[in-house]
Amino acid sequence: MNAARHGGAKTVAVSVTQADSDVTIAVRDDGIGFSFLGDYDHEALFTNRLGPLSLKHRVEEAGGRLHISSTGSGSVLTVRISVDESG
Image (tube, rainbow, N blue to C red; front, side, top):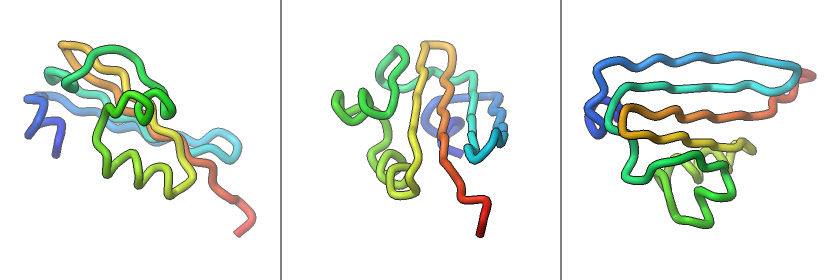
């Protein structure tokens, strides 16, 4: 997993929740964080050219939104995607 390989994380927790038509996937780790620190929403990640490019594009292609919170003692990566429950 990237959190262990790149961030030196010893602990990684993944949660998946659904509220109405939104599915949220959150990945939390206790690694060293990204090369940047702070909270960045989807637009800020693209504008500031931060975060994994391939992940940003995959999330966007799925119609989702990415949020990254990075500190020197861990990261939280959150993906929120709206799903069509009628299909």
